[in-house]
Structure formats: structure tokens, C-alpha cells
Length: 254
Image (cartoon, rainbow, N blue to C red; front, side):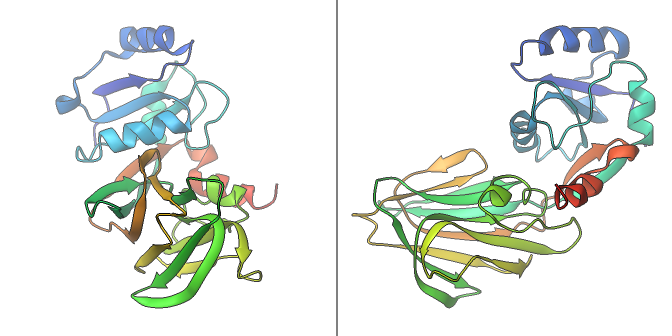
């Protein structure tokens, strides 16, 4: 597969515009519809936005870190880019598809590469009913919220909420409560990736809840369903000496 036609995208980081300009002069710049690969300069937040933007293109994305946080990115280096692309390894990811029903009865869909999170909107704790594959597992979860994470996203918000890190290829999702009060002994669950997760918001008028797929937020939700979108495939490229699998593995020993 040829990777010579590169489409460059850059974040708003202060050093990015100059780096993009230099890379375009060195390697040329293909329009998106004629590109073989996308090279994205920025951090993890920018990478998520790029993946959402190009989800229908089928193009692989190779990230280079500009800034502090770049778990999904490779190190920045302007030289030997073509060689790095040719020698890179690819990771194929399936995002989550969130369907959120809001208080006015409307439905909204969004994809999440990292996680779907539900959070209380007020000073009162959220009261949630959790069902898996249409079977109620927790009648009432009292917490700040709950999230459903992919393996790729398990080292991010999920891990900060004390959820498990999931190695790539495990075919699993993490369901993790956020600051739970009841049930006191429930710390989350690991589910097969084909599971359907349904969350109903109890007392939604008194205890409003928002739902976010990565960075796409809907407020005043009353019900959220999360499933893996097996039909949608995203491809990330990593330098062989620092693959995403290795990074996720190493995070478990920090």
C-alpha cells in the first residue's frame, strides 16, 4: 500500500503551524479525497477530533505529538517521515455508538473512540438504573455518574475513575461508576464487546444528567444506550518501537 500522498492536519498548539508548513514543503500535501494517509499533529484531544472528522474516509491516521499529552500519538520528528509510515504498525479500532434520549423525547446518536460518560448536572447525585442486554443488573446506582470505555480509552477517563485497563484485542468493554455511593461494593464490570449497555436516569427532573461521547455532549438525558459499532473501523498507525499495545501494557505497571 502506497503512503506517499499525505494529508496533514494540525491542532492549535503554538508550535504546530510552523511544523505543518515545514512538513508540507518536505513531503507535499494531498487533498483528503486523494490522500493515502493522514498525519495529524497535536495531542490526544485533537486526535479524537480528527478520527471523528474522517470516520467515513477509511484513511489510516498517524499522529505526532505537539504538546504534553499524546498517548495516541507518536513522537514528533520531521525527518524520515515516509520511512516511519512504511515501517509503522496499524491498530484497528471499533468505536462505541451512543444513542441518547433527552427529556423532550428526541434521540441523538454519536460515536465514541474512548468512552461514553454520564455525569450529574447539578449538586445532587445521579440515580441510575443499569441494564446489560435488556436485563437489569443494578436497580439504583447512586453516583456522580458512570462511563463505558473501549480498550483504547481504558487508560484515560476510565482509569482515572479507577476502572480497569483493557489490553487491545481482548474484545471487552469497561463499565465504571464515577464516585459511587451505592451500591457500596460495586466497582464496575468488564463486559464482552458485543454487550448492549442501557442506562436509565431515575428522577431525571430533580437529578438531571448529561451524556458525552468523547467530546460530544447531550444534556438532560433520560436514557442512554451504548453498543460497539462493529461496522465502523478506525485505523491508527504507530512506530513499531512504541506500539499502542505496548503503551497500554506499560500503563498497568506505573
